[in-house]
Length: 287
Image (tube, rainbow, N blue to C red):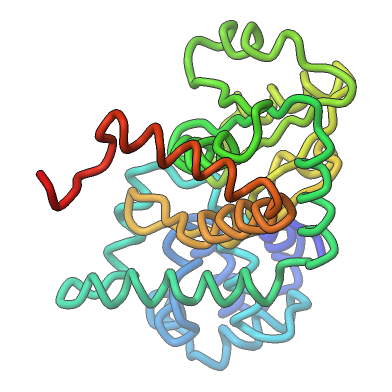
């Protein structure tokens, strides 16, 4: 199956029935809305029966309509502008119960990530982090919070970690100018993918460093560049990126590295507790 479903639809149009051509025309023009419609709703929008929509999906080579809709969703996730996301949200969200809709979607993404994560790849990622001479973490735009979270905890456990700040393009390369063999570049990127992160990873690879990608799937620009990718399902809720599952995967990485460093953990955190107490880092009952 061609990865770009719109190309497949355009190529097969001549062989479609009248109803199928109407479906194809609608999807090609309004793919951002069609990707989140049920078969019945799409049929109603086009003026054909639900069974015609289901047969259309089969005609394209999909096992059913849900598989075709999933292909559409995967294809468009990095194409939608913020305005298009807001329009899609109008179709997806129940205004009367936004909190339940959003939390339910996040739970689904957590389950999908847990079912799809490769234990072997996860273990390899832990080994890559522990073996690296220096670790450079890059996450731009909404992925910045994920990169900072990973950096915060790895810095408590290791002394060779740094986060690359999202500044001017030239400054990104200035911050990783010394990266080289034996070092590890960790790129964090989810739709809409940051071109700066992908290009910085390519730079690191050219300098001889290893690269670990934390991303969402085969459409990611890290594919074919990173030595290893860990996948977590992300989503969009209106103009907001939902990154619950990626954060959970990063949390698991941090815990796994902590477990591997368990002999040093008590000493590390005893020193930290002393510092936190001396400088009143945390609120106490005494205050």
